[in-house]
Image (cartoon, rainbow, N blue to C red; front, side, top):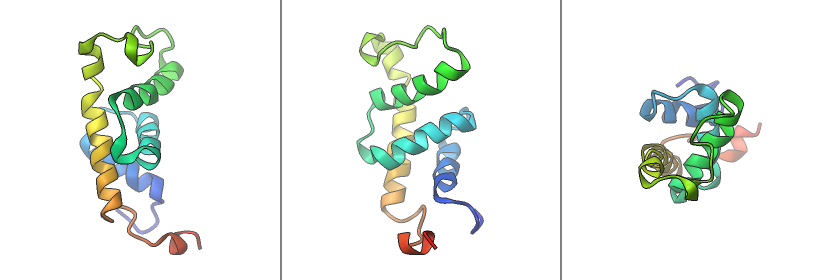
Length: 107
């Protein structure tokens, strides 16, 4: 990654390495989860982020229902995404991503 990339784009790039089937706008939703829920991200969190993105791209999608109303099989579709979010959050916590100190990043 180049030095000019911002911290959100660093997270998006790390997610894209694991989730090569996702569009950039969805990856940005997942990047927010990395920052907000991090290693505690649940499959429901991943579904909700996907649902906010999917509402803009296909508002009649059959899986646009609350997580608890999904079948177990449909709920399980969120696991790889939640796993990737948690893994990137771990890398962020361990300093592998966004390694600049916050004070330097704000200048």
